Length: 230
Image 1 (cartoon, rainbow, N blue to C red):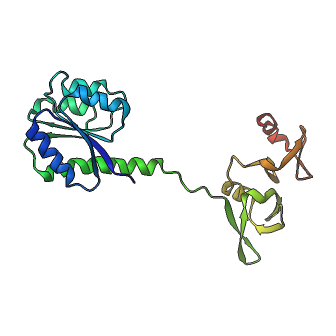
Image 2: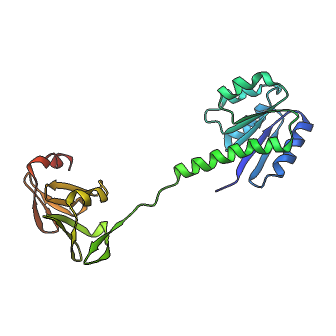
Image 3: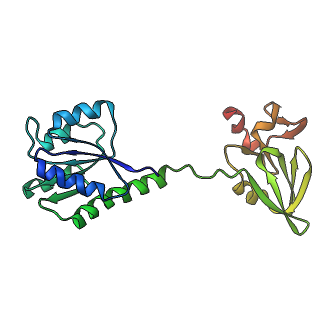
């Protein structure tokens, strides 16, 4: 996961110096710039993205809260101010934290850790899950790997199912309902009480049958809507 890029919008030189020093002590923070007013920060954000803004409220030209309202997709924001009366408005604008000057490094660290935790959570949610491409079946007292891409169709045979693949056939003790629950729904379709087929293996079809890899398989009366979706 990348570092948190941040900018400081602060018109008081001493307060800006303190923030720069605090940022330098946090390994996962990368300072992109310090701006003495919101107009300069706006110019920077037109061509650059950032993950976090340390924002003072009483700024020249454009106040901090007004600046925050101009941001269409604002990054995380930590308010740094000597005035506590703007706290409610700040949290209504979804700021991550509200630091009252003067604040110690420990309090600063608590605030940036909130941003880091939120970033981790977002990363987890956006992380692409591993896509399973196979299953293991019990065949003659051993587990056999069967790739979804190789399955042509599955046929019910009383207490067993016959799985026909492009390479060989397998017979395993399982119901069609059980195997259906293990198969990706976008790759396989039940077309009969006794048959499940691989959609990618369809060669041709009519209202009554489907041909997969040269084998004709009947379409059950209750599964005819499958044709319309094709």
